[in-house]
Image 1 (cartoon, helix red, strand yellow):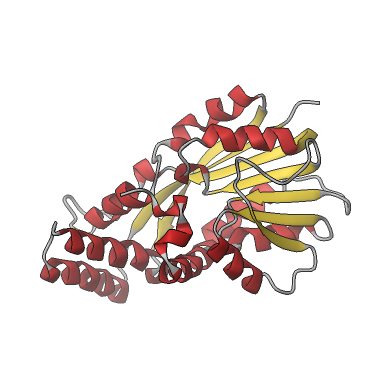
Image 2: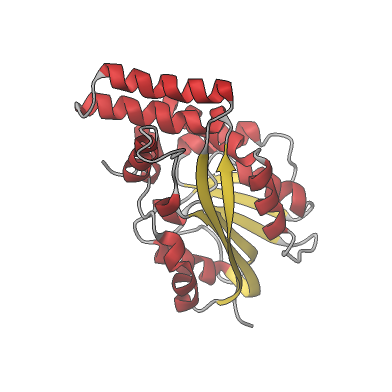
Length: 267
């Protein structure tokens, strides 16, 4: 199966709504708020600055960028018309924010016109991430900032003990919903090869215990495995039930490694 985040509109309105809600829930996690606030704090902006997010989804992070950067102009570019429609509704009320349907490899932006480009959990879902990084280089002003934050999906797990059956849902999600689970290991060379100078790179642990954030991984993947004939309906239901049991007794556990790279376009 092709990563559905490469063509979100083809996945349908239910998928769009479910993952728009999931992205909002994920970003409300204190650890994710801390990570985003930390990289936004590195930006040096004026009231005439322009900041863009590439692959904005339904705007969960873009709204944080707009709040931090006000009155600077913030634009969220997203190839999915469905996500952009959701983003416009959810971002209503931010006077400095707009969302535009556009491919991250071909932005409707002039050369050297942008002060900062942010890519938040995007590159892991594209087949040719170098195109997006090169496009960021094109649109940035000299001295402008590139911020890339992504998940090292090769480390994602739901395991609470050896051979934890719930972990198969994490592995299935990575297999079916992620294009390159090893993108984090390639980030530094990917960014520097285009011409950027990397100023910061680090990885932080994120522990997920919120059932609203984990349920889509379990619910969607168990249903897919059942529909393919890989598992029976009883096991699919049992995996979801096990998720609910752990959520109720406080033993639900998921782990992700989140990387952030900050770079500058040379003067």
